[in-house]
Length: 180
Image (tube, rainbow, N blue to C red):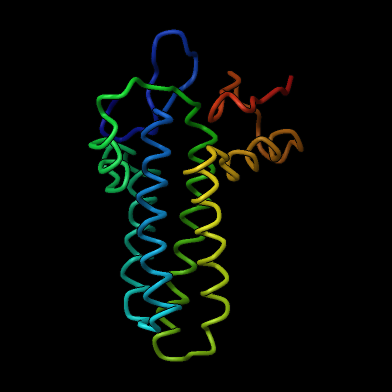
């Protein structure tokens, strides 16, 4: 895989893939960070940690999407933990779409959390967005359900975005892009 790339080609697949184990592990690392932010921000009422932790998550998504997942901090931590396990290839295209949604969500939380430091009226929207983020990370980490990937497949079926030439699989082979 080159330095600037999202996914890699492997033998037997005609589309770029990522390792499902690393992706799920990265979600678990993000879930842990999101839970720490939630506890500090919404239980202990220490809002100062929210911009730092949400900013870190946004940075991790940004690096994964625009540079290379291998250089994303959460992906790297996950790789360290699962590197001796066998690889489970999943399609990269829908993961890029899902992580782009994750980037938008974490950037929104980051920006609103900066306003929250000065004005507590931002508490409810930041709290709600954090709960959505935690829920999505939980679904992916625990059950292997990537809601962003499901939305990708829905947008392809609705012809809102162009269908890929090859039909990539998703986590646990639960879905495929069956558009002709």
